[in-house]
Length: 187
Image (tube, rainbow, N blue to C red):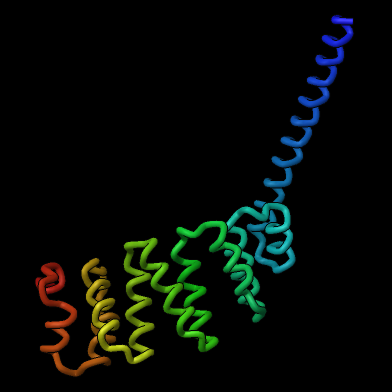
């Protein structure tokens, strides 16, 4: 009886291992296929890529790009990418700009601020300065213009142009955006 249980346990273990190896092989092939699909620039391929690997945020971003190129709604794909990778500022920026385009300014601001929270880089700050410029929010504009300039962008001309469009007073620009930022003042 003991030998029979031992043999049954060995057979069961072999079956489980075979099943696990089969599943691992299938998953590997499916992921490779999804990667191939994601590299293609067609809407059908993008959709299939997210079906094969629905947990890959980059595939959802690519699919959102393809939807956008086809002039189709892409918000759901961007939201899925944001769920999968909440630390990706590019997705938050895009969601914010799309919300602004729809006239949903509260959602736009929330998404753009979220992008600036997860990333200390220039693009979220620059985008927020632009957003507040378009909204006519003087206080927030100057805060984010200054924060963008603190990062000493290689070519700050566009940001200075935005500041000049907001105020034609060079003293105000100096005081509100540039003062105490050594790299900008020395350039």
